[in-house]
Image (cartoon, rainbow over all chains, first blue to last red; front, top):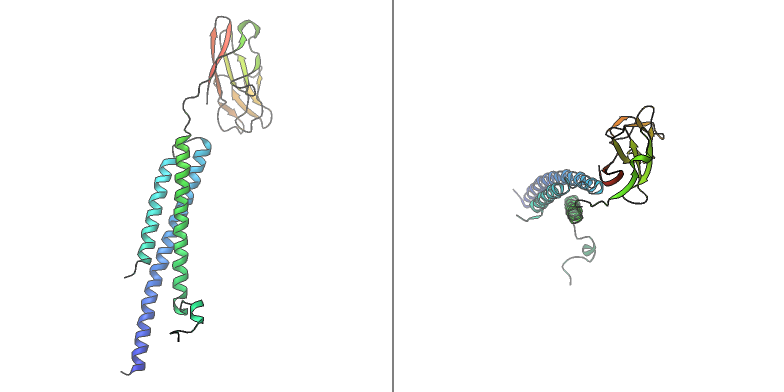
Length: 83
Length: 163
């Protein structure tokens, strides 16, 4: 196998590796989007409760939002951490 | 002599990496928005905890004398503030009830209909029971706010409100 063929193999391997990475990035992006949507719902519920003077849902939504945020940070860490 | 051409400084990302970086950066932005949403939610929660109202203290106010209100009649009074219109109704010889005059639908003043013994909101045809203020018909979503009344001899005093 000559030099030219070696380079082609290396480039195709790199492109496969890139495709794998793209899959994980898309998966993480989708998960973060879903988490963000849930957080918006919880923020809306918390505001609704706060403005209505009903504090029952305010603290649980803040805790749930924090959990979503932590999950999102964990997911982005998975994508950004070099291996 | 530089190792790479000058234009590479302006375009440091290779075309093959471009899509990957763009999506990765976008996801990073999403996570930042997620953090901001959490901070906003925590702020709302903190505000709610700090401003949690305790039991309100209502003043006692003389609103009428028993002898001045005929059975089946009503009277407007203001409680607890000078702009909070309320309706006092004498249901029978011994029984007096009072409610906030503000309809729970859109805040129109309600009136007592002696012939039907109902509280009536003329704006959107809402009806409330004079016995306990519950909604009988129409669009109001919840019962009228009830004013607590205490009878001291021949005097009627408002002492608080429920709802």
